Length: 402
Ligand code: SF4
Image (cartoon, rainbow, N blue to C red; front, side):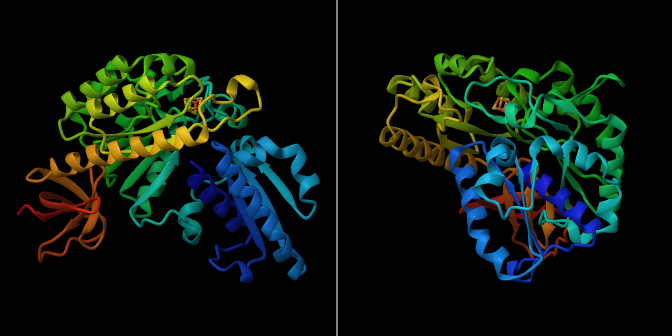
């Protein structure tokens, strides 16, 4: 979502006459779009800001904007700590800022596209989050969940497709709880309407929350092949006690049942996830349950993180030492690697739908990078059926089925 926000900021400044530059020395304005989901991300953004002091001093008229979630969290102190900062745009300001944006901006200012794929683009369909996961700062910095207007989303999607976009990645903190209350439209209604757009070949979404899967969704998913067969479904822990302390609202069995339903709808589905290790109170035995869940779920990959407290409240500080967390993290990463290797190997001999991003290279509907290894040239934007022959270095290799 931060990448999409950065792109929208770039479009907004394109309207004011700015262009994106790779070279800071040639630039008149630097915008840092920050993240605060973990302390490390926030620290990185803030230290980058500190380093810009020299850059600003070196030439008159240079400007710095600090934006995003860390900007929202630190808003009050930032100007005091960094008096050379020109402006602060918190994540909560984005909604108003972007709602003034003409949805046709992208076609008028193609130079403002910073998401580096000629055929794929993001589409934010909701902002904020109304869940209360105990480790998460997102609801505080982005506010409660607010869904965008159904028709506006469809218009944006059509505009993007008219510029050559073939794949849309729908974004939202809990994307599948999307609801346009006024028009009584659900996430499934949106997927259905999007799948009817001519020229749009693939629809991805991230990240869904296990609590918001509906029967309607599974029914549509089983028959609408434009919906990507890769689902990133954060689980966070494989231990019911920890999930309850995290206030995630589901148990491991519920999570595994969703995966089962997705795979029943289409056995080519691949599932990836997020894990947090070292949550306060997580025992070695609890952690081992996470390893077991990873085995059962057969994830194609997982983002694994050490727990990072976002407040100074004693209850938020983990009783698990950093060393212990690091040990658990490396054990989990090793386990995920082992599982993922088997998942990749399991694709050999299977037929996968590949949407090419560039010549003879693209992603399968199930989310794997795939190189096409035959003499036929498959161009960017082409969709082909590929028989997988081998796998190496997190990539599948295959030949186009004639
Ligand atoms: S659902 Fe996601 S964004 Fe919302 S509070 Fe939980 S972890 Fe944070």
